[in-house]
Image 1: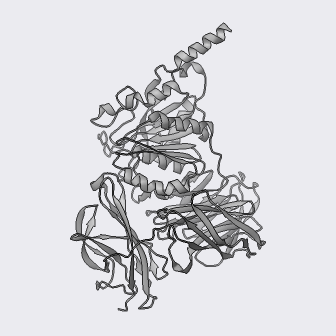
Image 2 (image 1 turned 90 degrees about the vertical axis):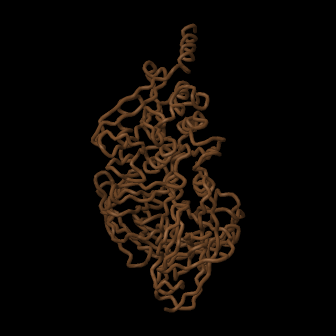
Image 3 (image 1 turned 60 degrees about the horizontal axis):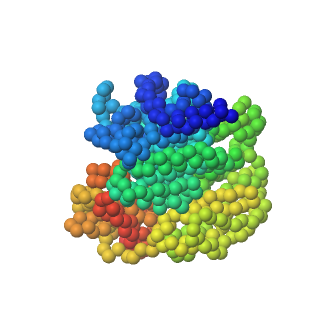
Length: 622
């Protein structure tokens, strides 16, 4: 008894002692160079014999693995009492059984350059791809320290640019990471392969986090708070295991211990591997959940996989998400996880979502039970196996209207049979975790669907919040629970005045507050919408104009061209404002009225404004 008492007393004495903080390095094959890291080990690490969960920490701008921000030694959140009363990583590790690894985002453009911008993002200037380095660092740490080497006990966290990286890395590797946190991270950056990087916005990537718990920390005085609110308007309704913590704080790491404790709770109660998942990736080649994707893409874009399961998936390659132009010429090679009987044949059904013949192919699983499927970049529904395989596809607002928050919305939801046999008539009902959603009339029984065919069913609903920007719901069909997300727009007044730019020069605001003379659109410059022209819709702002981001379901309008206006020099966030360049279908008749809803972001750092309005104008014959 006395021995047990002494052991318990010793354990209490050790907990709260100084952690072991070591600055180490290893040779990276991914980068072809020596990389550094700082590791925080519990005080009793050398004697306990225990294994520990790991949090990977990603620092912010001008920091290093062992240095606070340039010129701000008082902002050392690693250890000491100089920041937030000592609420630091070191303090947390001294009281908890966890390892924290702080990687080094150092990205010199020339040998030895003291470059403060980490991670090779916005702009992409070197060959270092930090997300591709993450699995190598994980493997090294797991092989050299006593970690619990599974995704359920592995997390990412970070500050500012590191907060962006924490979410990006966790979303790219949900099969490696069980939880991710983000202290006041930037919402978007240009990332990806050198030579053809793409614009990556977290608000559009919420679907990458199935099986991952997420948390974002915002500050009431933080200069990025506007963008965090914009991101929350999407994530709060599409991510069931996401939380936001807001503190009275400037840009920094307030309540560090609370966020690290979020990860400890996630380690204790991890989410299971999802039965179905979706993923968007900026790299031409990637792996996720045991699946591997390779492509020949050498231009900016995103590979999109939707509702992936053993029975199939949807795929496309787009210039931007969610609605950018489809890059049809790209070739995709997809290798599944080990899901099928080795060396046995499976039927692959390929349905092009924009029409075309249905293809039936036979694929032989390899010795590991993987299938190899070749696709193009266009929109596909892919079925794997025999029998009837039902899947949700596109949702269209009826009568070419927009889905308006606070008003009844009537959808036509496309249901595909991507199997090899006719489906039986089956009941369907709808569920949602989103508050304030009331379902109206809907098709409660799906008729039989022939193999390779589709039909549209009705779904009506109302969201009682007039500011809601998205609603996520699920179609329950037999033992399937299939997700559907519907973007919502506000009920907006008509624009008091606007101009159509169709190849004519205007004095247009760019980069937030700078006026530039721009020729927007392509056409005869007469300020009218002619068939075949490309336009911009301009809203007056003093002695200049602001180009609007536009929304419409009018079949005469193609909205796949979107332009990003970088506001980094103005608000120092790394984010952009968007505007559209709609193309008028050459076949549309003169006199037809075009109806669109517009959105403009107005500079008022750090609390920018967003306004909505409607525009209406006729198509005019040349």
